[in-house]
Image: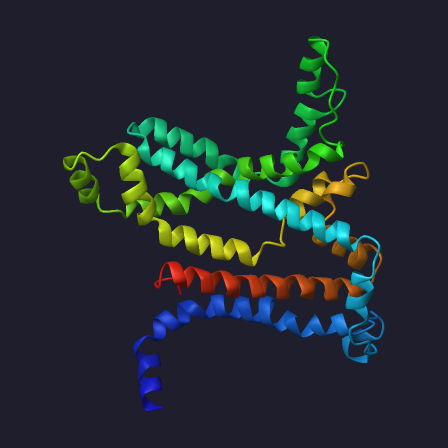
Length: 300
């Protein structure tokens, strides 16, 4: 007890700096967890959380017995897999390419150009997509028309929407995601490269035996965090691009929960599906963390 008091006195200023962050998580992350109980109730706004009747697993059963459950979960998993396969390595590749650039001015220019899309909202990005890809007035379709080629409905074609989602996600996040890998690359001891050059190692050998092992911990950590949110495919992006013509291939759990919870007022059902998604993410992060420890014991 006395040791704890002395420790708090000694590091009181540091604890004071931590307090706003702790309050944030307590108020906006932990207190709302009380409303998870709505997943097991027939929630009624007028009756409130505590007066609404219990229905047990009924909300979960409603979801899994639904007509569109396979389509919604399938779209979510497919889009998440595409983003994991294509979007996750993209910042790593960009960081490795920028790390190999020797011209400081060119490197800073490329970094600035790739960072900028991160600060654009998906509403603005969709506006750019309309300007370039709209069936009638889009620049790309005007060029196709000029060459007497058939116009393509990029934004309404269900067969193209997933590719469009993944492509825009890479464009919007690649520069920002590369920051952490560039910081990790900066921490690699330059003497390792000098020793490798003396031994006659090529650039590819240096990349394989020095650069990639040097950022392996960061890659594994980011992969674990990505797997924990594998069912979070980006509500803002999907919602703004979704329309009745591409909904079959783009409707995901998050957009379905929004429609059911906010538009139809079925809060209990929406909460149940959100809880299901969170439990899956929790299980995945535990499994990914266990696998990561086998590769490197320093991870957590």
